[in-house]
Image (spheres, rainbow, N blue to C red):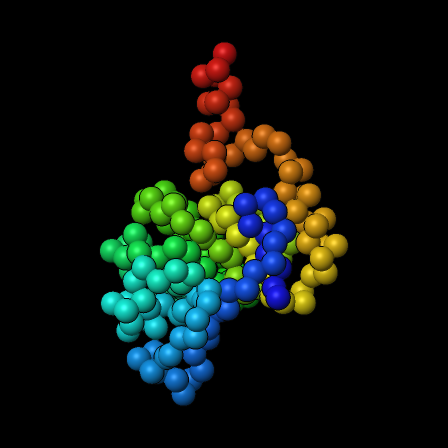
Amino acid sequence: MPKLIKNGQLIDDDARILVLDETQAPEELTLADGPVFVPFAAWQAHKGQLSGRAGLGVWLDSHEEVEDLAPDLDSIGAIALNFPKFTDGRAYSAAALLRTRLGYKGEIRAIGEVLRDQFFFMQRCGFDAIQPKAGKYSDAQLEEALASLKDFSTPYQAAVDQPEPLFRRATRSA
């Protein structure tokens, strides 16, 4: 069972991330019971029957636009944003857009090539769940990563988790 960091805790997670291969059409997808993240194309093809299903999430690849989900956000409990390689940072912007402009309150999960040194910045952009690829880190390494998320007690830059920069916060409280 994959481990993930979610809301400041290391937890087991049984949600599956469904990936369509090049021979599968989104319209032909059948879902088993249980928590699952479906690709955006499958969501578009089946959203009438999937809308409101417990344990359902939608995942977007880095080239897909989160704005395309805007009309459906109320019926999606979780959104996973894929990092196809660690140098592709488009999911940071997508998470920030979901939280700020689109006002999404559900879970935003980082999947794919997520690296430990990026976890803190992922949180600052609006991710509340971080799921490295299975086997990438041991449980001990994930526990260390979780502890390291508290290394910075007061970030000075503005971000999703702290909309005002430190110098403005300091002058308002004085």
